[in-house]
Each structure stands twice: as C-alpha cells, then as structure tokens.
Image 1: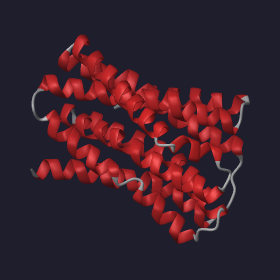
Image 2: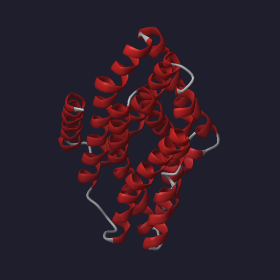
Image 3: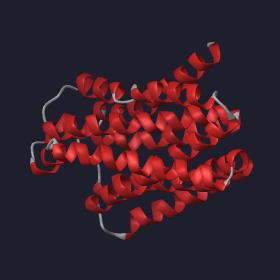
Length: 246
C-alpha cells in the first residue's frame, strides 16, 4: 500500500509541477508569441512520441508480447475517442472553439487538460510497475509536456480578467487528476506482468492519440510555419537520447 501511495504522489506532484510551471507565466506575461507556443507544444509532442515508441512500447512488448500490447494500445486510443465524442455531444468543443471570450476559453481548456491528465497519470503508474527507470522517464516527459498546457490555460484566463493567483491556482488544480491516474495504473499493474503490458499499451495509445489529435493540430492552429515542426523534430531527438541513456 505504501508503494501505491508513493506512486500516486509522484503522479500528483509531477502533474501539479508541470501545469503549475506553465501557470507561473500568468504572473509575468499576459501574451506569448504564437510561434513560440506552437514550438513548445510540438516539442512536447515529439518528446512524448519518442518515449512511447522507443521506451514504453518496447518495455510492454518484452513483458507481455505483441498482441496484448497492441490490444491495450487500441483500447487506449478508443477510450480517448469515445471521451471526445461524449464531450462533443455535450457541446464542450462548440463552447471551446465557438466562443471568442478569452476567459471562457481558458476555463474550458483547463477542464479538457484535466481530463487528459488522467490517462497520462495512468502511464506513470503502470510505468513504475514495469520498471523504476521507465516510471521516472515517463514522469519527467509528461511533466515537461504539461508546461505548455499550463501556459495555454493561464494566459487566456489572465487576458480574460482573472487575477494572477486565480489563474495560477486553476492550472495547478488541472494537474491533480494525474495523481488518481497514477494510482489506478499502479493498482492494475500489480495484478500480473501481462496486465502491466496491457496497461502500458493502453497508456501508449492514449498518449499517441493526444499527440496526434490534440497537440499537433493545436500547434498548427497557432502557427502554420516551420518552427513548430522543427520543435517536433527536436522533441523526438531528445526523446531518443533519453531512451538510450536511461
């Protein structure tokens, strides 16, 4: 039980630190270059892609084999798609993209990121069940990935009229679901090595879909030039280096 609590706390703290670091921007600036924000988003997308493909999935293949890992991967993608479809039916995305009010945009973005932080926490929890090194790597990568998301939340809320402190606290709260996801991933990963592989595959599928379906499209909406794409390449290179020397 102590180990599970420790993993949950690691997920919780990393989520809070990641989004909170981005939220700190609310204390210093009210605007940021769309080019730079696009670069940061795609850098984190490339970093996540490389770690999933070169570390998380290979670890899952070694533990549980190809079929089980890919089944988990497909389930991870499917769950995120079903969640998005539900939110679309509830009018979530119409509110997010159809209303130009900056304050509402920031709040809705915070809700969406909080939902996405749960499967990322799941990746951390199941990663620690596979190996400490994989868990540590995923924790660091996801924390880095959460920084631009914190910026994307805090700046619209600041520009929309929220105080610096209120915008910062909301970004911090959006990282809390990572703790719950990490706890669930660790609990399920304890069942068996085969189940750990399925959990890792599930987390990998969820993360890759978030990269392809959320981060990269969001970056292209911000800035369609080459700089964000170069950020993606740089993130992949950094992820490969992390995977090689971890």
